Image 1 (cartoon, helix red, strand yellow):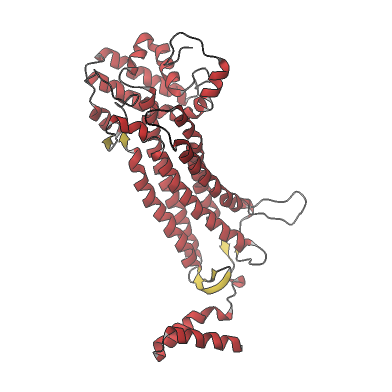
Image 2: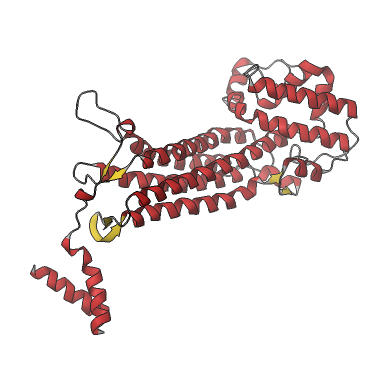
Length: 395
């Protein structure tokens, strides 16, 4: 099998396995984006007079066939391909012969894979945004099922001030909606067209117009100068993972509350049978595993961000093969978040609060009493605070 960098020398199998790693399998999710970018690049080559109309028509038809075949599972990227870019060109040349090799003019695997990756990131961002909004909406529904239901508010794990299901759920809903706005900001780094930067130093001698692929692929701007493209590797990925880490932190804190509320000691909520598991030894157990795993996976999201930041730290300029390793934590972080955002609304929709178990400590209105003394008697708050504290000690 001939790879894009092949110079006729055999590659040791152990070296292939180590350098390709999981990349060939990970690239499966990028195939459709790679084909989308390849179509735009072929059209740009034609516009620049570097590809005939006949060859463009042949390549376009072949790319459509390759896309359809991949979607049906007729071909997959293998270890011998090494990566998705080699597999795609191999599929093309198998169908149309040497014309398939014309498509690599004016691009490198570096800007080719980065273009596919950024298109994927933009789609993933949209999916994450929809997922976060779905969680917020499910929290709205939960609050609507329990209007004006009083809930103790806690500080230091002690009852502190009166709250409500509406306030509690509304706080989390607000944070998930804040996550959607932050995701919108985070995508800016991925919305730059890398095509035309090639291996990081442009395409000297070729009359390619980068605006052409920018418009065809829907990027906001071209990534300029070309030397900045490889320097940016990992930053869009890390920024998205940062927002994922914060969002998963919200999910973990929501899960932590619900796990506490579900204990026999609190018994604030019930969960539907189909959202709990059992014990292999204790017949009575109904375990809230979904929320436990959400809580745990927030740590996994933090680890994905940390791994990407560690990979790109202190790299010199230009492309380095280390950057290939970003895909593992990036895809894992996105997948964990999307799975969590999908399961959370279903779990929340099956959750019910138990008003009969929501008991407030009689002293929970102490701060309100102090405030009222200030308003009614005009005394300083600190004096009102001490007076209420003294009254409570007498009881």
